[in-house]
Image (cartoon, rainbow, N blue to C red; front, side):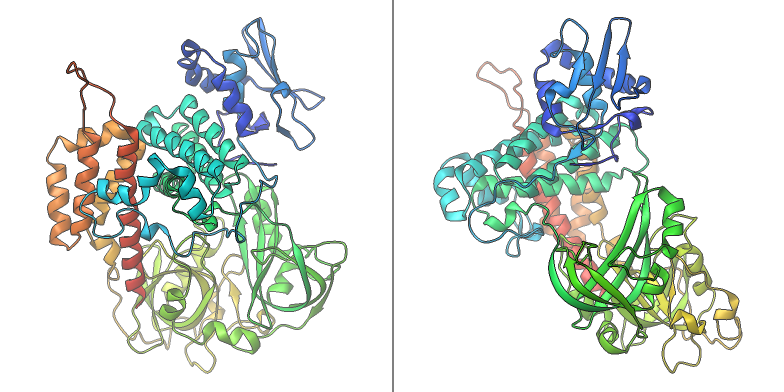
Length: 634
């Protein structure tokens, strides 16, 4: 198991070892109803008093008579219930033990789950059923009718549906349990999504893992970590990210529970490195890696002679200082005598290579690597990266589920717009593009380099970067270089081999043609380029969905009683988003539905119907936004 440190329970919780999800879920489940009501308050204060002992155990004292001791295994993770003990009389069913486990980071299980029957699962979204095809993605009149198309088999007949969809009955049952837990968590929202709600999700996630549903389990863990971070008001947490995590979880669990999904939606456990034979790869650029969990390092992107993409990464604890220094660190791969700076502009001949499914090169015992000369951008296999317009390259990328690949293009600088650089591709009829920092940290030179480029309107340059598929026509460049044969382009040192890594190299005045002289802007820099996503009223739907995640069903219901729903529907219909208007109306109506029993008393509304309505609106919004982003590149 690896430790996920992105979710902590308090200022002292960095001392606490990670805990397996099932251990925490069992501890919370064993509490009485009275103790469960006190759990969130107990979690908030217990981690500050954590003390690490010489034997590696961690103790947390509660008053004079109770001490909780965590003794993680060799992996550094608490994987068994008996590794967490308390000295009070109620142990192990005590509040103290559950609070300490609840304040600990959640471990990410990596042991292989039982394989699903049928063809090999894939790690990304099913090709035939992405979120864009989820309930509500088409012009469905209401969320209820959208839900019936997928949820019908979930209510009954799961056994037969499982046979047709390639899933076992156990997998359908596990997915149905995860769907119910996810629906309750969505209805609660961040404000009411405390430890008890999170524990229910963790238990359902563990059941999904045992049944061989790793994608659903991973989605549930992301939601739990997001809820924790949001309740702790972590600076690293974004409400939009938690909203996306809920959408992924509900979509995956809902389709699996219906029995209509194929084996591809089950996901795949992490696969080990596989033999890749002999390779010859050439460096493209370096990219700093800096995570919110304290890890830092570098990833050097490579290209094989056949056009396949590879990378060599070196990421370890150390944060910013390590991310900055790793760019010149030695490459630990098969005895190769060069550093990452040299590899980014050179190449390798690798014998006995091992390659991960994501293209990372491993450093196994049998790997032997020899440094070879590099190639300039546009030569050899790198020519294909710059051979087609950016719009065509973006259109060929997967719509969702995987990190977009690298693309290259030649552009002319138009000017600055905020922290973006406006550029236009050197292709007739090309749209205005935005260059945004690949990493916004002020101590990394991405933003500073872009500001310097923005100060030279008319400059032409070659850009290699990663498109941001969540924003209109936005490219996050990793490296830039001169355009061959262009008069007003960059003038880089010969040993840079025609490119500057924006995360490590700093552009200076000498790298520009005669400073600012001689550059003639080809067009005026507008205040901001056209942004069909920002200009559309879809932000109103996004705000509605995020309000539901933050405040739960109650927040959506309260908003439905004012004038906002009418204004939302009118704005959407005027812009041609009629389906979005109807799905948003269905969501607000379901949130405010207050059924009564036979005696006229208020009864609890179904969280399942509300979750389907929310998912329908969220799936439609995601599909609409992806369409607008794709259109912005054309």
